[in-house]
Image (cartoon, rainbow, N blue to C red; front, top):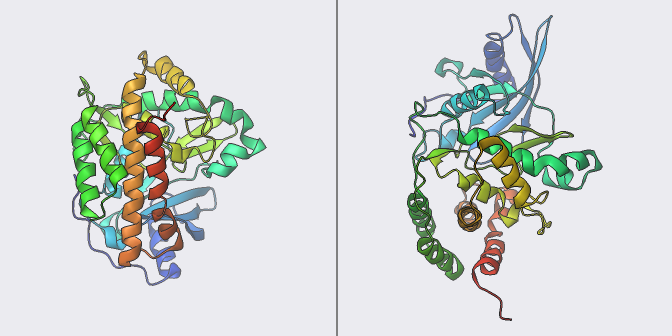
Length: 342
């Protein structure tokens, strides 16, 4: 459940931020200083910073995940202190995640966020999908994703009350409300919503933790395969097959359309990994429902980015360029929903 975050004063500059982070780092390492503070690329909801906490005995490479000031307490957005608690729970359950070192406190003057260990690896799809360095990883990655997703879906999160439950019907209804809010009718999106309502799967016997954004960019990959799962801000409690369908959306294949799992693997390998770790074989029809919903969801997310760009909330070139990609998802939806004439 979203809640109001504490008010805070935005650091005037990096020196101010470094001073405040130094006080946080000293809770971890006595006498530590902060070195190498640098801003990383981040989304509209969060900022990412790289830094090292250094003492005479130890050097700790870390990442600061910090909420953007405009987004503090926004409805429907998981707050980063809650996200940190979820990451801690995932790590305790055997899911590969960065270790959470410290959750920011109100008195730190840095808003909501947390410090986590820096994990070595790559998140950029072109490097993962084309680099010789990751050739071995590509052979095993789909199966590993299935195994890790099975681990996520069996986590006990019944006490984490900030996670919202959502049935398949809830997800479709919520997505339609979001789409309507942009005031831009798209006939192909309307067609997809009609198909989804006609093919709603039954509510699972037991809702499970759903990562909500398990895809390229949020998967840290090294030469051996999947090293860490990142960015848990969209997690909810629902149909676990939503994660498998999202991973298979065409937009994450980056041109490798014959390899539906992230452009690096087959659905069979994904399902094999999931079955090996859970004892349950995913239902292909159920996964297809979530893949189509995921394609539509990404299109509406792009539509939202375009609206944000036009309204002047985020005028970064990246935001504007991604906003234009809504049309790509229309093509993908038509390929899925409108049979070609023989």
